[in-house]
Image (tube, rainbow, N blue to C red; front, side, top):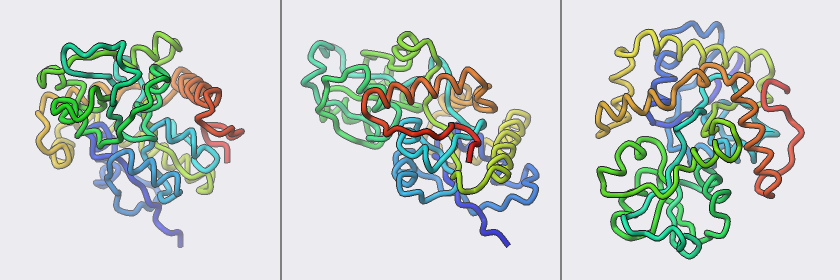
Length: 280
């Protein structure tokens, strides 16, 4: 008898949408046994992956660059696309020329947002790690000069009186020519090819089910979205759950490879000779 697999994902609407059917007996798991999911902020999941805590986990692609020898990328479940990257925001009047000496809030050391900012502004070294949902308040309250925001904050920063200094996703797309790889679902290579393929199919089927029954997912999504406006929640799902979420495809894999290569060239990621996908 095999031990049920441990897994975790974030409480953000795109992840709860993706995993609703899989965690609520809406699709056939065909012998795949899973523990109850752990829902945590993505930076917590990133740190757990460094310590190899979970069998299956949501990860920032930045964190993936550090654990590729232990984890492989699943084809399903990723947040990857165009027009969906993190934003660098500040109060009106902030001079972008002063970025080098400014205090910048980032949503975690291992987040893709942090790595993108470091690529965009390598001279800016005064960084403060905060939970993603605390960054806008820190900028508004002048605890920091600017902040890198992710998730639903991109839909609400203007309402809070902030301005966008740089769309880091747009910068990446223009610089690399690729869509921006934000986060993925990864599985321990030690699970073996057969179980990894089972997990991948189950996540794909969970997304297809959600697309066919979106209203049935809503109570679960809202349970974790808490105070999020319903329209913002829906915009969040539409932006971060797309065709690449069902299957990375050649375009998605090329974007990830480019991202990891640049990270290695910058000395941020260790060298790894493992393939991204199901090579175990």
